[in-house]
Image (cartoon, rainbow, N blue to C red; front, side):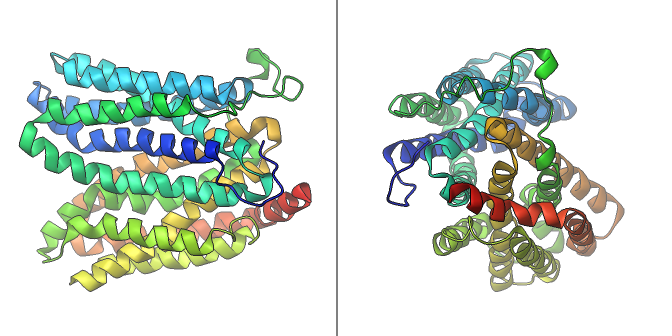
Length: 399
């Protein structure tokens, strides 16, 4: 682990892992808007196309605990390399597949790579920075993800209309290959200390990191309206006949998030969890109300900024808190537990959005989503001592 006298996180290895994380997330987010239409163009029914699209989330939800255990036992470089190669093979399979059945198989392969990379790269980064700056590191890691999630879909949607699905998806394959290339230059490959690593064998296999469960529950609740918005905001705007530049929504989100994280980057390791949670919960309620009453671009921009303050910040806070709560030899499992929570929110968000849209007038879409706010506060109140103690214990550990 980095332990330099100068309190900074931007070593060569950290920059390279963050770059690899960007390429990895770009590759996956680039394909996501294309898979449904591509599957149908290969002959899939609407139902089967939906199964193909959802395959990655299904794989992720069930295999993250296994990936977390592997991450605590093996070199983060080795597992990230395998994950990057699986992602490359999966995406190249998209390009070359002759039918939708094979597309499902390659989606499964890509999902395996996705699981390994998300868990391993987060944990790897925590090994590369001074432990006193793990919160700051998670903030910038989250920023790389946010930038990739904003840029990749915009590029892929525009490009496939010009050159078609297969050629457009080649860009995703190149990005996955850049993950493999980039990590070759990382010097610290984060091999676990054999004395501290968990004992091998199924008897010692853990499904979750128990101390991180409240964090996983909270991030799943914050993620529900975020991913519902990601899936449905275009149709929401169309149903309400709004004259707004909805394509700029997540770009505004990314720009605001960048500014916030640059300003607050030194606070993630020192401010108690409760302060972040209250602020982010207020911001979440604000952006949901703004989306509910939205009539113009200014209100849309305010909603996007509120989402950056709400979901964008709490994502990094929860991720770093999961690391702080876990013993050093269970950080991979803590990361996996955090991502399981996010996977649940990612799955429930679009489902909840679809149910609300089918049962209620569109004007109630975001107002109903406000139900997550009291549930978030209840979970926090039930676990506030443990969650607030994380930063205090973290500071004691590094002093």
